[in-house]
Image (cartoon, rainbow, N blue to C red; front, side, top):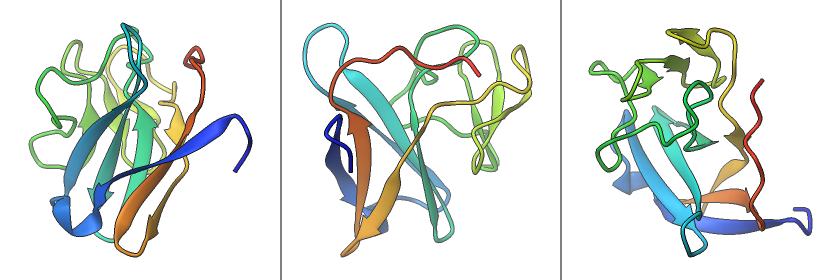
Length: 125
């Protein structure tokens, strides 16, 4: 882990539906770091909660990031659809751009995510 990151436990793996999501915030004030984790089987991915098309959080309702069938991530605003494993936009207004992936691991049954210690602008890749 670099000195510019902190680790955050966002809950237990068994507490996440399969498929399922959980959002989290780090920091205080008007601009905390917002992220979310996605479980699909034994795999867990984590991303910054930031639509690369519109520049706002992906979800309108808490922990609501997946398409109705649970197979992909969807932006509630403009319908951009992202692949869960890669974070690449596969449909909608920003094809080929990627969500900012975060390092995630499972430790003793807990989902642990590494996030930047200070505010960083999201990448538009």
